[in-house]
Every structure is written in structure tokens, then in C-alpha cells.
Image 1 (cartoon, helix red, strand yellow):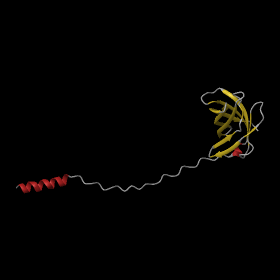
Image 2 (cartoon, rainbow, N blue to C red):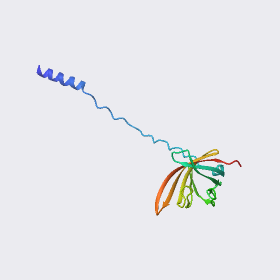
Image 3 (spheres, rainbow, N blue to C red):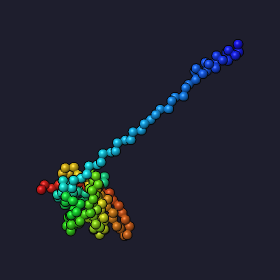
Image 4 (cartoon, rainbow, N blue to C red):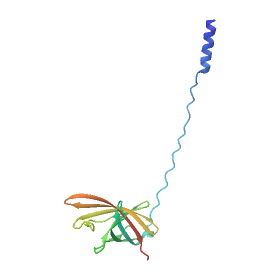
Length: 155
């Protein structure tokens, strides 16, 4: 009798035991490549822009300048008030226009040299961006973040 109870117990335990699930076959489908960023058409940007420069977190205008943009990366000029024009080095990446000005005397800090690097985005007749100003003071470098905003002058 013990053998029958033992045998029935083994059968019941075997019947109640959880079966190992069969491993799922997972087929990984690679995510589609992101769409490339639209490329700026500099021919649509060419013209004269009235620009304002503000602090990174302020709407107070610190200075203004005129930006002459061409249909290529060559010939871009920044004209600060009462200053000779500055030739900008311009590159384009996706929807961004990057410009770098040569070192010049700061408009905001008299007697201090500054180099500026800006990244602009254009939306119709509006241009906005950020500018990093590197000031050289007694041999040390001081960095200030600025915002830029401008509108295209009518042709």
C-alpha cells in the first residue's frame, strides 16, 4: 500500500510541476536610421540681417550689429557700430550655421580682446542663435554665453 501511495504521490507531483517554458525566439529588428537634419540653403539666408545680442538669460540688448550673409560660406561679414567690418569664418552642419569671428576689441568690455563663436538657426526672415565669447584678460581666458536674435532687412 505504501508503494501505491508513494507512486500516486510521485505522479501527482509530476503532474503539478511547472514545465520550463520554451525560450522565446526574439528577432531584433534594427531601428530605422534617423532622418538626416535638413541642410541649410545659404542662398535662402543670403542678405543683410539686423542682429541683437542679449545675455544668455536676459532680454536686455547688450549690443547690436549688422550681419552680411552670402549664398556660400565665403564673404560673411559682421559690422559692429563704429568699427571696421570683421570677416567671419562660416561652416554649415545640418540646420545650423556656425560662425567664428577673429579676435577684436570687445564692445562690452573696453580695452579687452574677445573671440566669438556663434551657432545660428534660420526660420524664414528670423535668425536666432547662441554665441560663446572668449575674453582674454591679463593672459587668462574668460567665457560668457550670449544669445543672438535678428531679422532680415528687406531687399
